[in-house]
Length: 474
Ligand code: C5P
Image (tube, rainbow, N blue to C red; front, side, top):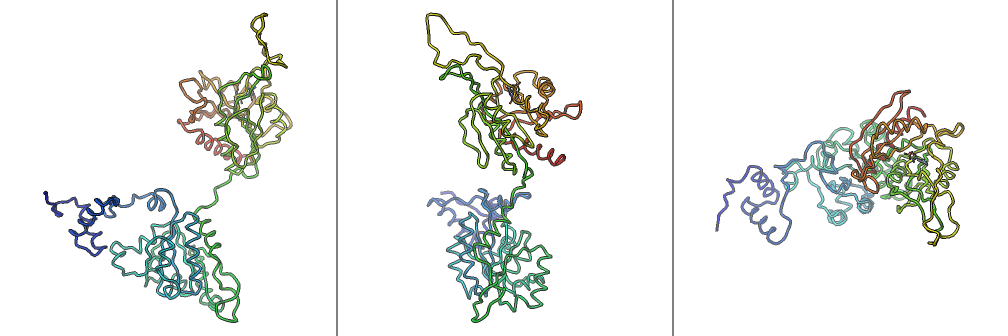
């Protein structure tokens, strides 16, 4: 049997073993035996070493802690009767998929037990600044930094005074002093304490320091016959405030704007059962509708027959033919932006059969075609209701940019999204797109060529450009 000399291991591994064995109060040799036993018994093998693979700079706390992107909160529970509500707060945050690590002050342990906090958070609870089990690698710094938000609930008058004055004589205050994360306080104290000049000063100082607060609310106090401002906010309110900080509302640059989009193919009837169609899937137009909606726009999507679900929050009008599409587009005006992503059939059958065409001895039926209305050109040339920004698409199989430039001039639109739809590109019906955005600056054209992107990415990029243009010309 081979023997293992720990001295000869890599420095990174030695360092990891030293830290891990110190943390667990074992010798390094014993720690190695435990690791091997755990491994053989099927426990996951230790992978990351805190010493040999520090968190790469630039990654967010969410990525560092939790590759799945789950947000995490360090919850400091202060010593007050309201501490019992913090147990519910743990539950509320966990329900919202937030990881919670609890720190209990000495006084908090008089009101809630570490066991309850640990059982609800499914994590160990931290209480002692000098705990060899967590401070072997400066645990208070990790508790302060390896989270996305620090919540203090209840934030007692004493904890707030310590914070306002930069004390760090216990684990909670040391974490708060070492923090580079947002801090949310849920103050809870007797109304006289809340109104005391010292607390007023501390509150003002903390606000100036960028600390956020929720509550306190007015109401009955635990002390009999006392009421006033000082009750800690309810767990549900604190959880909502925490979520607002963790997931700030997305910017909505198109709020208040009406965006009209066409998508998909059109079906041009030959008779009641047959039609002329094309291979458009509608994916790009639907993605633009979803992106515009996410940017806050009021979106109407007029689509030909496609097998896609309505994007949430979008008014979807389903049509068959080019003429239907034109009517519904005209009826949906006015709009601030119109984007014509539909692959409208250029022609329809001149004499659509009222009955199904039959094979007869008279020979093969001849289909005469007539041109469909050009929706993009029609809307671009409107004088009264022309949307201020009209965008067309140019699907080409050759001479992409030149054809797109000619199309802007011919149709009278402002921008063209040109894409190569030659069979080799796989764009038609596919999930990716390679596009060039042509915009006009007087007589000059600007061509912005984007790399291969998913249709969602193209949509997001286009909507970002639209938002910029709308911002310039509100
Ligand atoms: O002329 P072409 O079909 O290449 O033009 C493509 C652009 O014109 C697209 O934006 C398409 O939605 C629009 N179009 C239209 N009505 C038509 C034909 C094309 O809106 N009848």
